[in-house]
Image 1 (cartoon, one colour):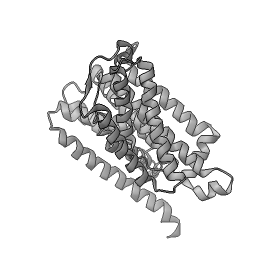
Image 2 (tube, one colour):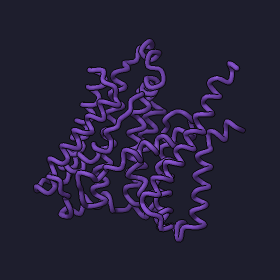
Image 3 (cartoon, one colour):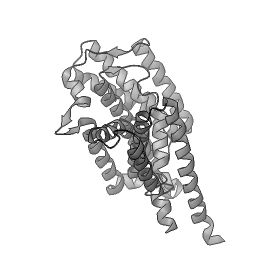
Length: 315
């Protein structure tokens, strides 16, 4: 019973939170608002999926927010210069990929800890974003076809949710059903054991960082299309929220381990919390305080469970 509570405690807490918001926040359970919560969660989830894959490989990618921003401004700058939007979008993804290559080379070739390497890459990406934009935003003048990628629908479902669904299923298949995904996960959990059985650990870690950067680039493009604008701070808050979502996810489904289902739950919880507090009229900063308290409680609970699981047999 206790093990099940530890595994699904965050799910229960999320249901309790949503029940409270349904009772006290006006229109929280309205279908349009619930759909909007999932739509708002989709941008963060796209980025957090990449962060989760890097973490599964045993690396921490702290550049994801800045990489998403760089992809966004590169795309916007080329659109505003008259380039076709598919070329502009591809350039944005290539810019993100270059950041991923830089992270991978720094970590695997020069043995720089990913914490330092990705912080440095993020700082460079931020500087490049300000260089491209001159510190101002690109607003309007985006082709309708491009904007529809972020504002369009497939039947009643907003396209950002569709993109997230496709990415999530692809990532889940990669991690759970492919040899490469299994090797990547093994490198994160036991790199020395993975090396001894013949897995190229450096290659798997590089792949994790590359996929993280590509997901960040995709997030930046979808966000740009949805807002029909771009700025050098467009995804500035996404890093901390992605970390929060992944940490929340690590307290459920597979406690103590990064997992895609948990990350998805974490992003929906964060989006729902922000939406509910806004409907209740709380100031913006209260969202961060509430999120921090939830993280402390859930991560602390999971940590106690993992400590007991690790040392219980020795006592």
